[in-house]
Image 1 (tube, rainbow, N blue to C red):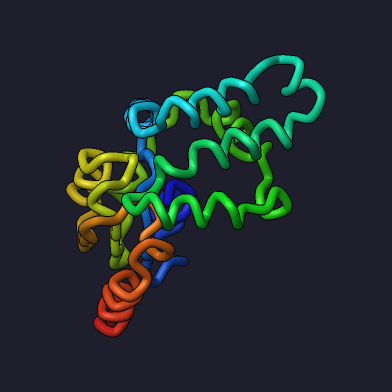
Image 2 (cartoon, rainbow, N blue to C red):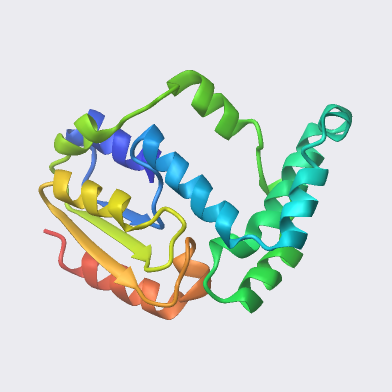
Length: 182
């Protein structure tokens, strides 16, 4: 979401429309909300596994594996439906992730804030988010208030990945949005 919206605000003539599924923090401050919400949703066992893989010796021995195992331990926090979360955690594959991207983004952007770019977006934008998304509602509501031509939609009983947790509702909303584009 962050990259797509930042691009739409930087080169608005090149963008016909934007669809976001799940919310990405539009400022560094909202990243803290995301992290806090993740921490309170993890149980003692998940926190223990995550902390196990944060130990410097494990990180030094295989940083990609440590990052992957931390992601797997945190998966339950991203979903409303625990069974779907456990299924996702079981299906995760380390080959599907580049764990160097988030740290590279944060080191390049630092305390980023894409709000000025959101104000420059002229294309129609669909902001679709699960009602129980880790990012919270303030982040996506602020994005909606800054993007002149945006539509905000929530899916109940849904976390950070609506296309996995509520696929029928997700694609119905996306299809309706796309069908009304000029």
